[in-house]
Image (cartoon, rainbow over all chains, first blue to last red):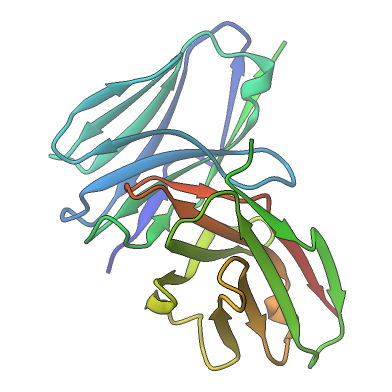
Amino acid sequence: GESVGLHLPTLSVQEGDNSIINCAYSNSASDYFIWYKQESGKGPQFIIDIRSNMDKRQGQRVTVLLNKTVKHLSLQIAATQPGDSAVYFCAEKLGGANSKLTFGKGITLSVRP
Amino acid sequence: EPEVTQTPSHQVTQMGQEVILRCVPISNHLYFYWYRQILGQKVEFLVSFYNNEISEKSEIFDDQFSVERPDGSNFTLKIRSTKLEDSAMYFCARNRGQETQYFGPGTRLLVL
Protein backbone atom coordinates (compact mmCIF):
# COMPACT_ATOMS: atom_id res chain seq x y z
CA GLY A 1 0.00 0.00 0.00
CA GLU A 2 1.03 3.61 -0.14
CA SER A 3 3.14 4.96 2.64
CA VAL A 4 5.48 7.78 3.28
CA GLY A 5 8.16 7.61 5.90
CA LEU A 6 11.04 9.60 7.26
CA HIS A 7 14.45 8.15 7.97
CA LEU A 8 15.29 9.98 11.20
CA PRO A 9 13.02 11.08 14.01
CA THR A 10 15.17 14.05 15.09
CA LEU A 11 17.79 16.27 13.55
CA SER A 12 19.96 18.71 15.49
CA VAL A 13 21.92 21.35 13.58
CA GLN A 14 24.02 24.36 14.43
CA GLU A 15 22.58 27.74 13.62
CA GLY A 16 23.91 28.87 10.28
CA ASP A 17 24.54 25.37 8.98
CA ASN A 18 22.55 23.76 6.21
CA SER A 19 19.92 21.18 7.12
CA ILE A 20 18.88 18.20 5.07
CA ILE A 21 15.70 16.35 5.93
CA ASN A 22 15.04 13.12 4.09
CA CYS A 23 11.88 11.27 3.23
CA ALA A 24 11.19 7.95 1.52
CA TYR A 25 7.99 7.15 -0.26
CA SER A 26 6.79 3.80 -1.45
CA ASN A 27 4.28 4.55 -4.17
CA SER A 28 6.06 5.11 -7.46
CA ALA A 29 2.84 6.40 -8.98
CA SER A 30 2.67 9.42 -6.67
CA ASP A 31 2.72 12.54 -8.80
CA TYR A 32 3.05 15.35 -6.30
CA PHE A 33 5.03 15.91 -3.13
CA ILE A 34 4.96 18.60 -0.51
CA TRP A 35 6.83 19.65 2.59
CA TYR A 36 5.14 21.15 5.60
CA LYS A 37 6.51 22.75 8.73
CA GLN A 38 4.57 22.39 11.93
CA GLU A 39 5.29 24.44 15.01
CA SER A 40 3.95 23.40 18.37
CA GLY A 41 0.20 23.81 18.63
CA LYS A 42 -0.21 25.02 15.06
CA GLY A 43 -1.35 23.61 11.79
CA PRO A 44 1.01 22.40 9.06
CA GLN A 45 2.47 25.32 7.16
CA PHE A 46 3.30 24.94 3.48
CA ILE A 47 7.00 25.18 2.67
CA ILE A 48 7.55 23.94 -0.85
CA ASP A 49 6.17 21.41 -3.28
CA ILE A 50 7.28 19.56 -6.37
CA ARG A 51 5.62 17.58 -9.09
CA SER A 52 6.90 14.23 -10.22
CA ASN A 53 8.04 15.60 -13.57
CA MET A 54 10.68 17.69 -11.81
CA ASP A 55 13.88 16.77 -9.95
CA LYS A 56 14.52 19.96 -8.09
CA ARG A 57 12.73 23.05 -7.01
CA GLN A 58 14.04 26.03 -5.11
CA GLY A 59 12.37 28.50 -2.86
CA GLN A 60 13.63 31.07 -0.45
CA ARG A 61 16.38 29.29 1.55
CA VAL A 62 14.76 25.94 0.81
CA THR A 63 15.28 23.38 -1.92
CA VAL A 64 13.37 20.19 -2.53
CA LEU A 65 15.00 17.33 -4.41
CA LEU A 66 13.12 14.40 -5.85
CA ASN A 67 14.81 11.17 -6.83
CA LYS A 68 12.19 8.98 -8.43
CA THR A 69 14.64 6.15 -9.09
CA VAL A 70 14.98 5.42 -5.38
CA LYS A 71 11.72 7.09 -4.34
CA HIS A 72 13.43 9.65 -2.17
CA LEU A 73 12.53 13.22 -1.32
CA SER A 74 14.66 15.69 0.57
CA LEU A 75 14.29 19.17 1.96
CA GLN A 76 17.36 21.34 2.20
CA ILE A 77 17.32 24.43 4.37
CA ALA A 78 20.17 26.86 3.87
CA ALA A 79 21.64 28.84 6.77
CA THR A 80 19.34 27.27 9.33
CA GLN A 81 17.88 29.72 11.81
CA PRO A 82 16.34 29.20 15.27
CA GLY A 83 12.96 29.94 13.74
CA ASP A 84 13.34 26.84 11.59
CA SER A 85 13.01 24.65 14.68
CA ALA A 86 9.83 22.63 14.15
CA VAL A 87 8.51 19.28 13.01
CA TYR A 88 8.75 18.74 9.27
CA PHE A 89 6.43 16.47 7.32
CA CYS A 90 6.64 15.25 3.80
CA ALA A 91 3.45 14.23 2.06
CA GLU A 92 2.57 12.67 -1.26
CA LYS A 93 -0.42 12.71 -3.51
CA LEU A 94 -1.64 10.08 -5.88
CA GLY A 95 -4.37 10.74 -8.38
CA GLY A 96 -6.20 13.91 -9.34
CA ALA A 97 -5.21 17.42 -8.40
CA ASN A 98 -7.61 17.49 -5.47
CA SER A 99 -6.81 14.06 -4.05
CA LYS A 100 -5.85 13.49 -0.44
CA LEU A 101 -2.36 13.91 0.90
CA THR A 102 -0.63 11.02 2.62
CA PHE A 103 1.75 12.22 5.29
CA GLY A 104 4.95 10.79 6.68
CA LYS A 105 5.63 10.53 10.39
CA GLY A 106 7.47 13.80 10.85
CA ILE A 107 10.97 14.72 11.90
CA THR A 108 11.92 17.25 14.53
CA LEU A 109 14.49 19.83 13.54
CA SER A 110 16.29 21.42 16.48
CA VAL A 111 18.57 24.38 15.82
CA ARG A 112 21.36 24.95 18.32
CA PRO A 113 22.33 28.60 18.88
CA GLU B 1 -2.79 35.43 6.99
CA PRO B 2 -4.48 32.05 7.56
CA GLU B 3 -6.24 30.35 4.70
CA VAL B 4 -8.99 29.17 6.99
CA THR B 5 -10.09 29.76 10.54
CA GLN B 6 -11.31 27.00 12.78
CA THR B 7 -13.54 27.05 15.82
CA PRO B 8 -13.31 26.20 18.58
CA SER B 9 -9.57 26.17 19.13
CA HIS B 10 -10.02 23.69 21.98
CA GLN B 11 -12.89 21.46 22.97
CA VAL B 12 -13.26 19.08 25.86
CA THR B 13 -16.15 16.64 25.77
CA GLN B 14 -17.41 13.56 27.49
CA MET B 15 -17.26 10.21 25.76
CA GLY B 16 -20.48 9.56 23.85
CA GLN B 17 -21.24 13.23 23.27
CA GLU B 18 -21.58 14.84 19.87
CA VAL B 19 -19.12 17.49 18.77
CA ILE B 20 -19.15 19.84 15.81
CA LEU B 21 -15.94 21.35 14.55
CA ARG B 22 -16.13 24.34 12.25
CA CYS B 23 -13.99 25.63 9.44
CA VAL B 24 -14.48 29.00 7.83
CA PRO B 25 -12.59 29.62 4.59
CA ILE B 26 -11.22 33.08 3.99
CA SER B 27 -12.37 33.09 0.40
CA ASN B 28 -14.94 31.03 -1.36
CA HIS B 29 -13.39 27.85 -2.67
CA LEU B 30 -15.07 24.59 -3.41
CA TYR B 31 -12.56 21.95 -2.23
CA PHE B 32 -12.11 21.32 1.48
CA TYR B 33 -10.46 18.64 3.53
CA TRP B 34 -10.46 17.37 7.09
CA TYR B 35 -7.41 15.75 8.58
CA ARG B 36 -6.62 14.70 12.11
CA GLN B 37 -3.42 14.30 14.06
CA ILE B 38 -3.26 12.20 17.18
CA LEU B 39 -0.71 13.60 19.61
CA GLY B 40 2.81 12.88 18.45
CA GLN B 41 1.71 11.11 15.30
CA LYS B 42 1.42 11.95 11.65
CA VAL B 43 -1.38 13.82 10.00
CA GLU B 44 -4.11 11.51 8.67
CA PHE B 45 -6.66 12.23 5.97
CA LEU B 46 -10.31 11.95 6.93
CA VAL B 47 -12.44 13.31 4.11
CA SER B 48 -12.55 15.71 1.21
CA PHE B 49 -15.60 17.69 0.26
CA TYR B 50 -16.34 19.23 -3.10
CA ASN B 51 -19.35 21.10 -4.29
CA ASN B 52 -21.40 20.03 -1.26
CA GLU B 53 -20.59 16.35 -1.62
CA ILE B 54 -18.02 13.99 -0.19
CA SER B 55 -15.35 13.44 -2.79
CA GLU B 56 -13.07 11.02 -0.99
CA LYS B 57 -12.94 9.52 2.50
CA SER B 58 -10.63 7.31 4.49
CA GLU B 59 -11.31 4.23 6.58
CA ILE B 60 -11.20 6.43 9.66
CA PHE B 61 -14.23 8.35 8.41
CA ASP B 62 -16.88 5.87 9.52
CA ASP B 63 -20.57 6.33 10.27
CA GLN B 64 -19.74 8.36 13.38
CA PHE B 65 -18.42 11.17 11.20
CA SER B 66 -20.24 13.50 8.86
CA VAL B 67 -19.43 16.71 7.01
CA GLU B 68 -21.57 19.44 5.59
CA ARG B 69 -21.71 23.10 4.62
CA PRO B 70 -24.83 24.13 6.49
CA ASP B 71 -24.94 27.73 5.30
CA GLY B 72 -22.82 27.63 2.16
CA SER B 73 -19.86 29.13 3.96
CA ASN B 74 -18.91 27.25 7.11
CA PHE B 75 -17.65 23.73 6.66
CA THR B 76 -18.33 21.40 9.59
CA LEU B 77 -17.12 18.04 10.82
CA LYS B 78 -19.48 16.27 13.19
CA ILE B 79 -18.61 13.35 15.40
CA ARG B 80 -21.86 11.84 16.60
CA SER B 81 -20.72 9.82 19.60
CA THR B 82 -17.17 10.58 20.58
CA LYS B 83 -14.76 7.92 21.75
CA LEU B 84 -11.58 8.32 23.74
CA GLU B 85 -9.54 7.59 20.62
CA ASP B 86 -11.10 10.57 18.85
CA SER B 87 -8.89 12.83 20.94
CA ALA B 88 -6.67 14.59 18.43
CA MET B 89 -6.00 17.81 16.57
CA TYR B 90 -8.45 18.25 13.72
CA PHE B 91 -7.34 20.34 10.77
CA CYS B 92 -9.36 21.82 8.00
CA ALA B 93 -7.55 22.43 4.73
CA ARG B 94 -8.39 23.89 1.36
CA ASN B 95 -6.72 24.42 -1.94
CA ARG B 96 -6.81 27.32 -4.31
CA GLY B 97 -7.75 25.25 -7.32
CA GLN B 98 -4.26 23.76 -7.55
CA GLU B 99 -2.70 20.86 -5.70
CA THR B 100 -1.29 22.69 -2.71
CA GLN B 101 -3.39 22.30 0.40
CA TYR B 102 -3.33 25.01 3.03
CA PHE B 103 -4.17 24.13 6.58
CA GLY B 104 -6.03 25.93 9.31
CA PRO B 105 -4.76 26.28 12.87
CA GLY B 106 -6.69 23.23 14.06
CA THR B 107 -9.08 22.30 16.84
CA ARG B 108 -7.72 20.34 19.75
CA LEU B 109 -10.36 17.81 20.82
CA LEU B 110 -10.07 16.02 24.12
CA VAL B 111 -12.52 13.24 24.90
CA LEU B 112 -12.78 12.25 28.55
